Image 1 (spheres, rainbow, N blue to C red):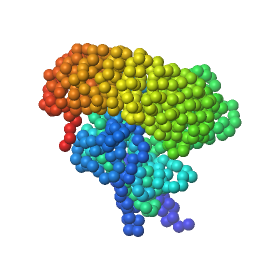
Image 2 (cartoon, one colour):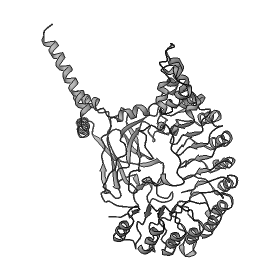
Image 3 (cartoon, one colour):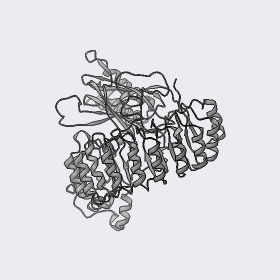
Image 4 (spheres, helix red, strand yellow):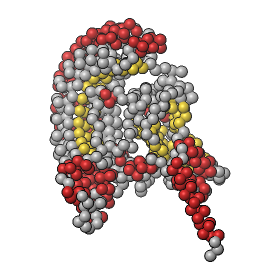
Length: 621
């Protein structure tokens, strides 16, 4: 053999090693340039022209600031061309999620976090958008018009929502993900993350957001999908670079797929024979259990394959007292639940939020799981679980006699009659019905039988005909109530407020935001202040009648107040706010956006005098 060939082989190996080393040590900017190179090369073929399209419609979302009966601040504003961009500021024509920052996590209504949540999963909200044409994505641009930086994950789905025939398989692929980062500017921007190429065409895109680092509500105006009709062909050069652009995010995807083959991971058949269990044989059973308590669910599945001793520990029902399946929503299905079932007989906290949609979980699969694992359940999170129907709620009411905490937030596909079954859960202490179709008759029955309620969310429940009747029942039956969310209830009056204030004197949190039928002139807000001295959070958002008298009553009677939102009032002066801030030493959040008497100068002066208080003042450019 000629000596040239070994030399060529050595040079080739050296070149390959250099490429891999360069990829591992590349800066973020270099990696972005690599992705841009791939993108530009994939566009090079004139026969495969790039398609650029705005979202056709919004098909699902977890929350929004707006009403169910209008377009202001709703997720539906993300469909079609931009309404606001490139302008910056607070505009009603944009899409806005319900919360921002950590303020809601600090309220009395906040739930404790689940253990074993993998560190990569930090999504709080999501929105799903469809596009006219299926394409192989080359770019996704998000037009952000106010307080950008909330988007942390972008996914693509293989299913075509407009196809008449159901797909044989539904896959979700992460196009881009990043941990929450602080964006200091509040101005508009066109967010252009460098996305991963996938091997299927899509016209269904999902944005997941985390608003915990934001100073105020993020506002999104439009989403643009760039892509090719035909699968792009990469050159050898670009595929090599792309192959080596390895980041920490790869770990996230692998972990995110941990639920994909639960049956294989939990199967004891794959264990090798042999008595050698390392030094674990010498440790007490309880100590091993404590160590395994720190593992995420996919890691627990993997560890179960190492030896018989650890398999026994990993399958112990005590490891599944708190089970958070929300991070694995894209993979969780009936098979997953079936193989988890023998290990979850003692489960007390179960989070199935966002799971089961598009046929991943069936009514039969969910029912089988709860019939085996529901007897000890105390807490059940089912936010945005659109597989639920009346049968599911009936099974919950029969199989979960100890249930104290039920979250059905944004389960807007549940039929109204399904909610009648909740009245059988007499031990309930927390019930979240935000954005559901619960009707008045069913809700009255729930309130009558669930007198132990301490936390109740009825925000944006548009099917309720008379909120005064509901408020009267709450005041009469729910004497232990500590938090109440009536966000955007359309017709509550001073009569309902009077019943609430006299009957629920333990209230610490009350959200009356965007309740247009409440008028300060009736004395309803002053009555609240006098009768509810324990209030820590009070939202009177967008009530233009709130006046100085109401603020002074709060200052005199609600000295424990921590959060107050009076956005949009014309009747409050800087002088009354100063009295409030002097009296309420624990006040940390004060929203005076669009308060015509509170200009930027007044905000600066109050900030200087009370530096520990976050005073919010939104603007429109």
